[in-house]
Image (cartoon, rainbow over all chains, first blue to last red; front, side, top):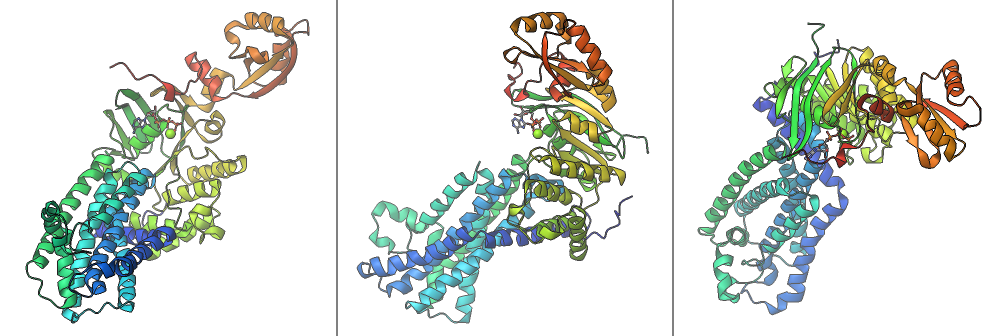
Length: 265
Length: 322
Ligand SMILES: Nc1ncnc2c1ncn2[C@@H]1O[C@H](COP(=O)(O)OP(=O)(O)OP(=O)(O)O)[C@@H](O)[C@H]1O
Ligand SMILES: [Mg+2]
């Protein structure tokens, strides 16, 4: 008889097992992300390029009442987070299209663990991209006023946004029939910060956009980041931002669980 | 317990949309044996294997694997089997070793045990030298070995291999056959699917021939071969007239006909005496047959003999009536 006595970490189906699966998936997805050099470089360079374009090409023509680079950094951070998180959809769609998901399922790995792995990788990618954007921003004159508490709070808001958007992207990845379709979602998310206060004041937009720009989830996230980093009062924006993130996360976790079961029925 | 089948299905049915993919599949696989599910493209081999590995629920019928129901006791079945799918499933961007360690961890081994197990399997599957290379750089044969190794991290009781040798060169195929034989020798039950009679013959104690979602024949390789004579004598006739005469003489015995190449095939056991007597009988004047070859019966021959029609790929099948 083969050695079925090999020590096992935990009983099947137990929460400890689900946690192990999620951690193993997180390590896997992070490793795959790090080795997908083209996509990684794009996600690091694109936000920096956009920031440079805004600051040096458009910055002279836009008056926001603050130094433009300082005004724009929170928006670039959010744009960067969105772009990085949306790549989760491509990773999930790729796994679903290949035999690897059968392999995982036959080992009793659930959809939640697989999604959690992709979301963790997304968080790691975003931490790197955010670091790069901040470094370049500081080099070109971004002067935040935040103290340690402000930085910590800003990091928290950004993390909540990344988490919510990554899990939403995971659900989109389950919905998409191919990786190409999933990558379309990246563009949608990339454009979401434009009709908001990310790059210009909402007041300068046409009236019909105010309703959307003022109330879409990206706006309170940017407003709270800006307030926290510049040491200004953030008011209700912080709670609005967190509420949006919590809502999106809850819906996405539930939806992805359901979609995974349906895809693998 | 010992003579209770380790895999048993009764009346498995599965449809996708209006296409009936399985129309009542009954299988019994003895513990410790090698069982081959033989069939052409679209016969339903992969669907059967996916039901056995709990990934797909049958519409009707039931399957028991290692003593558990594949629907009700999914989790118990999953602990006792491994599935190596038809298409490579591991991460190309991870090394062979990383892939195996990941599978070990997912199976529930501790970090340390998973590392040891990966090392053992890489050694056993002759992949130790490539352990630190990304799987994407492996040859087809190495990929396949890694896929199978990944299935073995948990020492499964039943190993399901879906077309383990399709696309491999003869040498890699040979290696794969040896691996399957080793598994069986160690007491593991192996159920594999294949499109090659020769492979089923070499490896399997019992073979089920699957056609359009039904088991059309079931038995030992010898049983099946007795029904198709095992080999085929192909005759190239001298001219069209000779072809016509000989085809008429042979009638239904000609299991293979290719008028454009003046080719007729008849079953034979391949022995010199049988071939000689067939030639004497078919061509007493010694002027009709220009050349002949003897080769192993193919799946087509088995099909023709057992179903009375050529093995049309079921992928081109019409949907079943609404
Ligand atoms: N998910 C699915 N949706 C629709 N049709 C399917 C699905 N899976 C299989 N089929 C159909 O079921 C039939 C049998 O498929 P299956 O993959 O079981 O055959 P197979 O014997 O493994 O063939 P092959 O040798 O090509 O691998 C085919 O006609 C296939 O098109
Ligand atoms: Mg198949």
